Length: 291
Image (tube, rainbow, N blue to C red; front, side, top):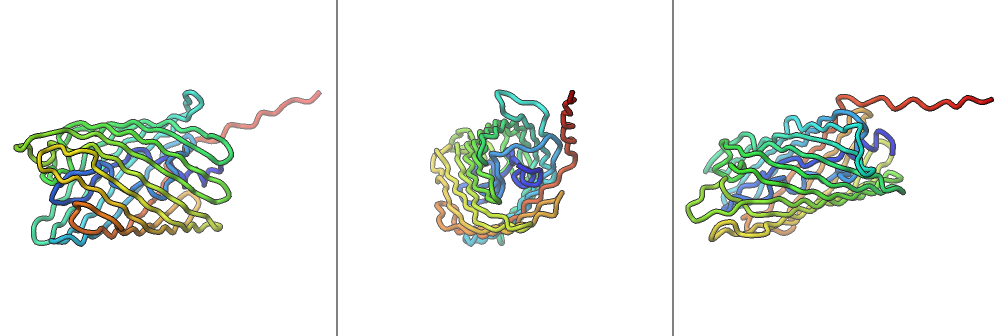
């Protein structure tokens, strides 16, 4: 796989954030759909990369909700090391969110920092696969009252597969995260459900342009406190991208087609901006002497 393809297919590590606010307040700790467009199963070349993934949307609940999210400096170190034939990577991220519930509140700030490790394999014939294991560190911010920032550590596991050949990016990512139970006296941010997300991508490159479809679903797996209303959603949308060489841009637009206990349907615009800070030089070819 070429350098441009591996950058466009940057292994999205376990970035960050539950950026939706509803009557039940808690849900996936990583934002559902945020890995769409990214071939998460594929490894990066050795180097250091920064990823920006801003997004902004409106949920037509009553009252309406505007939610914007950003990871200011999600940093990935693609190491020179391998284990069992898989490429080792480490990443760290601290996401931010701004939540505006019309006529009720407007809050912004950082969510829980994430520390993550990855291993990715080239399976041959255009197929790649990998796993992630990460931990969200406890934090308390202005977003805690909404259940976005949590005052306890939680864990996240990711499995991803990708097919990258002839300009195609066919990828699926499954993400599982842990929560914590509470009681009727628990405050938002002190409890959350176990949860699962599935993100899918099907795009094709035509020269430097990229077009295709994205979709995602998310679901709470349990009720951490009495009376908690479990949330789930499915969203579909499209993607258009352009490869500038060292910088790869993707723009996405999604809309919920099913939701339960979110109070309304979310319409959202996204961007994936992949910036290599440093990439190791390829090894020099071995020259065999002829006698």
